[in-house]
Image 1 (spheres, rainbow, N blue to C red):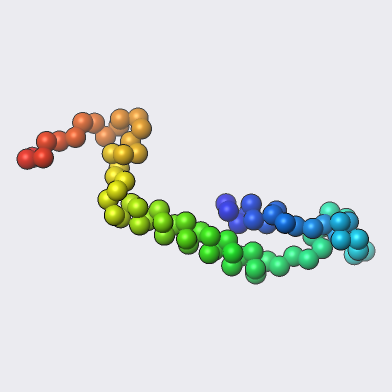
Image 2 (tube, rainbow, N blue to C red):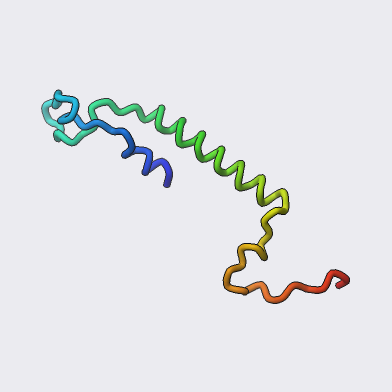
Length: 80
């Protein structure tokens, strides 16, 4: 999902660049570097996922903390 958003960020069209290649629409990207965008979105996803995984694995956030609709029922007493 992040990748599809990143595809549209800071893209200059051929019309904005002033040089339209024959056979392409003026709205086509003038310089498009797919590899660079893939690397940056992968780095962003890994960083974001690492932070979320660290929070979950540390026990700071449990399943009961995000049970907004009360589907898990009441907590069992500690001795059982």
